[in-house]
Amino acid sequence: MAMATATTAAPSRHDRLAAAISAERAPAGMLPSGLRAALGAWAAWCAAQGRDPDALTPEAAEEFLDHLLAVVANPRSAYAIFAAFQVAASLAWGAPAAAPLAAVLRVSRMTTKAPPAGRWGRAATAVAALRAEWRGSFQALLAASRTRARGAPVIWSAARIASVARALSLYHVAAGSAASATPTAGAFTAWAEALKASGAAPMSIAAYLERALAGFETVLTPGVVYDGPAAVANRWDAHAMREPRRGSPTTRTMPASRVYDTGIAMMTEAEAAPVRRISEATLYRDGLLLALAAALPERARALSALAFEATLYLEADGFIRFAIPAEALKRVERRKAGPGFHARIMNLRLHRALTVWRRDFRPMFDDGAWLFASRINRDHSLTEGSLGEVFRRVTLAKLGCRISVHDIRGCVATEIIETNPSTGPAQAAAVLRHRDRRVTHAFYDHAEGLVACTGWDAVLSGGASGDRPDLDLLSDT
Figure 1: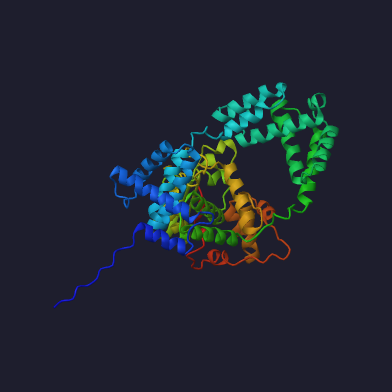
Figure 2: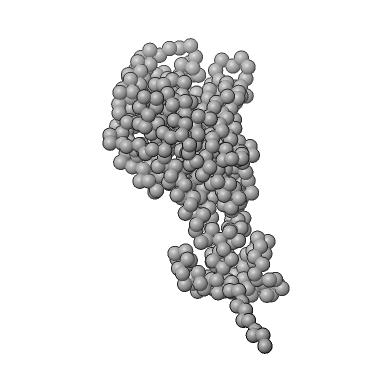
């Protein structure tokens, strides 16, 4: 007589949640009772709707959230219940299955925001803040530069117009209405000393003086040469070149490979998390920013222009291709209509990270294609300014050093030169696309006691590396 074999039923969603809670896989601060109640509310709603509670779909989750907002008096309480359900679903069905719930929550909670000001908008704002007598000349320059008008005597970039206008506004405040109408050596000297007393670095003071002088000689009174103020500006420029690079206790140069490895570790942590909320997606995004900035040492303006299938392409065999338009590069305005920057790097680890970001984490923000999505704006990517803020905040938190996106170029140059003292300067100049080697040396910070990590040497010597970018493939056409 054949014996009957017992069959074991698959664990239910409640069993899986209970097991996850017992294993302490729930995020800190989430009460088990709240997770069970949220999963129970989902089951009750599904039963009332005649739905299968095990069929977790974004559409069903969206309707469930609408139901909560309709029956719960306080919208914040309704969102809290749904957030708890999102965590419970991650523990019961798995993080990948519940990840789309993050987008459902974001769509419901976020409101439409005004687009961030573009570079010309920021320049216009700076011009509008000038004293009334100066605005007309700068508004004319702004209009000619924006359209790149043929025959215009001067064409400046939006960044140049904004920086000069801000410098003139500062000079006007420091010198007063009467004294600032025509620059003098005495007024420039007093302004420089006031800037120094406020804590400005010599390099910053030299930049302010140069910009204000350019505003007078090129825009406000073209053709007039102010020898006295120019002499003051030149003295401060020479002083800035002799002055050692200033750094705060939380700012220093470190090997770029350490920044890269930290970014990879952050993405690994986010991918392994038992729950995938917008906080885990943000951790992955920030790690990607660190790793990519170290692998492709471009300015924040260029990084903010990256978008899938527009300026960034994932190719076969670990190749990543970049096609950044000239508009997003630091160039004189007349060259911004020319060819852009094209790079092709082979980096298996970064290629996989970008693939995972695009497939699993990027959709949690919005359905856009830009690489660095904004946590607070579904309709626009992170601006260059926001990228810089994120980079400084994350490097301080993870590395104990506040590093800017621009500083990472110095980190790359330092590590290359430290690792390859004989050929490093030429290699660093090629990587950073510096025409003048003196500019590269200005980026090189031979910090006392700095021991560069290995990681770039194998790449630059042609050695095989699946983790580091093949920088020999970078090109600017």
